[in-house]
Image (spheres, rainbow, N blue to C red):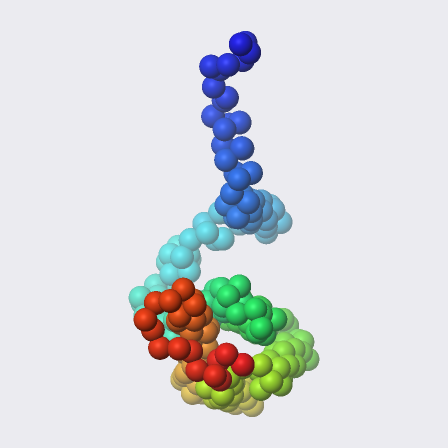
Amino acid sequence: MDVNDGIRPSAGRSMTRSLRRLPLVASSIMVGLGVIALTLLAMRLTGRDDAMFTRDVRAVASDEGVTLPIYAGLISILNNLIWAAASALALCAAGLDRRRRRWHLVFGGLLLVLAADDSYMLHESSGSRWLELGFYAMYAMVAAWLLLAGLRTLDGNSGLTFVIGTAFIAIAAYTDVATHGLYLAEDGAKLIGSLVWLTIPISTLTHARTRERYEIGDPVERPTAAHDH
């Protein structure tokens, strides 16, 4: 009998072994620790305390003597939530829709970048008009690729949905670049466009579930030919 039999591993060793069997959980923890480390570095470089980086914007503004109402930035925050939700769903769709995997991956990546841009005002804070226009040029190129690739691979409904959503996003971008002060027009068009885009991965995931049930013999309506091909 092994002398080590009956000796339980330490809690730390047990946790390490468990995380090795859960790579996504381990990766999530590492990303979180990385963000915390970068925050500590930013605190040191800027001389700010942790509240500046971690607390709600309204709470930080209150500490600075500015009281913001609860509805401040309402549409902007809502739009950021939609960007993030649509990105997550698009990346999930990429795992289920093999034929259109690349399209969904690029679409999800674009949505994630848009969420970060809107949340942290990246193009507005660039400090250069040319750099700000460069953001829009990059978005336009990615959207053009998605459009051309989507026309070849997406079914008619999803392709048309992407075109409609893109049209509203383009209106928002034009309003931002060419006008000043028309915030409701700009953010309203962006909100509609993001909501329309959100329906694309929802439709894909719904169809993937329907296809799965059909393949295992559940009594559901057979997916249409447009989706099959």
